[in-house]
Length: 191
Image (cartoon, rainbow, N blue to C red; front, top):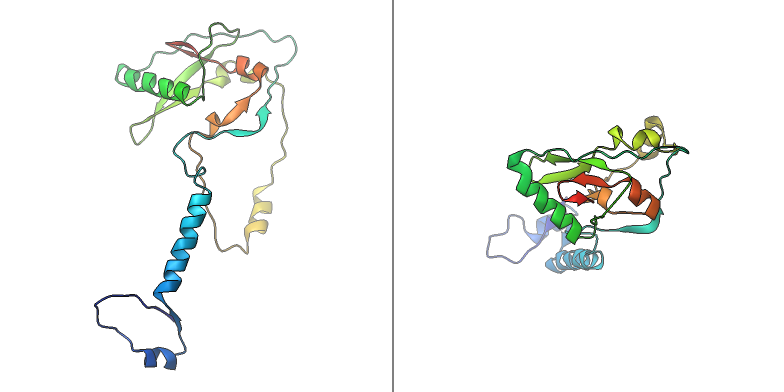
């Protein structure tokens, strides 16, 4: 049993004698403050991870190659619902301002841009790569562990964390050739 001792004007529920009799841990307010200070230091040390800005994975650039003798495919931009038009243009401008996308004057490949309305009313901008470039890409094989192997690895774990990267797909740097393959066709040009 643990009791937390805090400064307050409330009447104590249990006396020190009872706590000692039950051989309980007594944590002082200083101990609580030390934990909060440690947490604040950790949050400050890793504040860039908690930032609302789009991050950048800069350790290596993504490299996608098309199969030999592939012919580029250009598709027109898809019409967005009129209700979403302003939100789509706003999101495109925001992504461009954040450096996640750039306007391109001319390109051989043009992927239709797809806008998806999220539950919170915001717009997610995606590309429909399935209809264009995916079938022309060279296959890259990455061996992933089977789910049974993961269960064995995590069977004794007690604490888990979920990290949700904001716009994770926009955090990857693309090499020049890959950038030319993955351009979205939008109402405002190629991005």
